[in-house]
Amino acid sequence: MTDDEQSSELDVDRPALADQRGVDTVYGASEDSHLLAEAAVEGAKEGERALDIGTGSGYVAGALAEAGVDVVGTDLNPAACRQVHEAGISAVRANLLDPIRADAVDLVVFNPPYLPTDPETEWGDWMQAALSGGEDGRAVVDPFLADVGRVLQDDGRAFLLVSSLTGIDDVTEFAGEQGLNSSIVAEESFPFERLVVLRLTVE
Image (cartoon, rainbow, N blue to C red):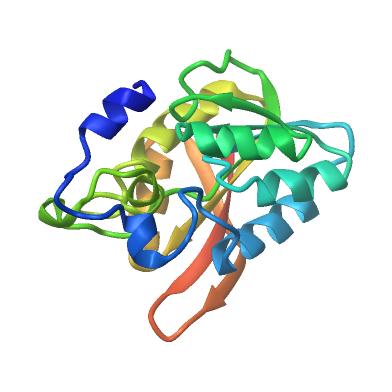
């Protein structure tokens, strides 16, 4: 999708969600980013090759790079790719794992859009795309789980941020159906949700 095509889908009668929130059009680091980064760095080894899917501001990718990991960030948002590249990290504009060859990396990390969202309220801009997980919160999570095993090397693993709003048990069940073992390696609770990081490996 080109920038013009993305812009043409916006509701011109409403301001962009990023403008409403008073933030940039690139998703910045938040509690979920910090939790994922800590778990990923702890589970990574220096010199490994990694992908940070939906890299946003590049916070998680930056943490991995500082730990000596050879990391590439991917994002559909061209502004996110530019921001990450300017920070000195390689970035590729991509939809999830589509352009990644099989058995390419040791590590994949992903902080997906996971908020359950009524289609009637979706705004169609980049910030909404970074937040909305569709009606059940798994519109992006499920395709990721269905494909991540393909790009991992034999001893590879993925770290996926999941919210209780999405349904942690539902995510682990679907992961199992895709031939993935999952375990919780980090978690943090808030008044409105519980965040966990799942470590995923191919069975």
